[in-house]
Structures are given as C-alpha cells and as structure tokens.
Image (cartoon, rainbow, N blue to C red):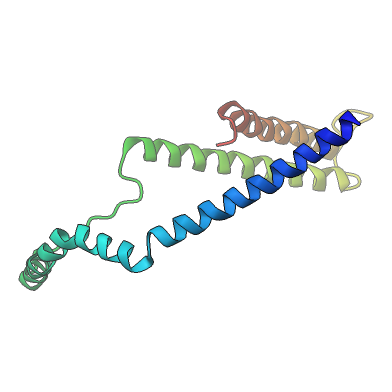
Length: 151
C-alpha cells in the first residue's frame, strides 16, 4: 500500500511541475513582447548608428585618396615559418620513403641480375636494403607526428 502512495505522490508532483512550468513559460513570453525587445536594442545601438555616416565618409575619402591598403600574409611570423618548414620536411621524408619502397619492391620482383654473393643476386640485396631505408624514413615521419600529438 505504501508503494502505491509513493507512486501517486510522484505522479501528482510531476503534474504540478508541468503546471508550474507551463505558467512560467506563458508569463515569460507575455512579459517581453518582441517589439519591446527590438526597441530597447535599437535605443542601445543609437550612439553607434549616429557615428556611422561620419565613419563611412572617412572610409570613402581614404579609398578616393588612394591611401587604403591591405596587408595579408599567410606566413608572417617565425612560428608560421617553422611550421611550414616542418611540414615540407615531413612530406619530403614520406615521399622519399614511399619512393624507396616502390623501387625496392620493383627490384625484388625483377628476376635474375648480377650475382652479389653465390646465393643472393644484386637486385635482391638492393631491394631489401631499399625496403629497410623505406621503413626507416617512414617510421621517422610517424614518430615525429606521434611525438607532437598529431599536428
């Protein structure tokens, strides 16, 4: 019996909270009509709007006199230069690693070739060396990126 009483209290509390929320929503909507809010905002912006024609005249005179200039530089600071140099270096290392890898695979796929030792051809020796160099260069880029946290 106690469980049903608690359940009814919860339902009554929920209904009461819905009634209060509805009443508060209606009061807040009725308290500030849109026209009043727009008027208040316009009055707050009036000093800025009064100075606007003078500023537009100054801007027009600057443009007309040829004194308006814009300086835009993507890599102006030292930090930007370091970032660009680091990025170019990583791209070149990755490209070199990929080039060594492709060349090594082509060498390993080529049959025959001069003998390096009695058991290994020169193509195989150069191919495996190229794969090693490719792995070192590629891992160097991966470690540098991981050390910085991805960028």
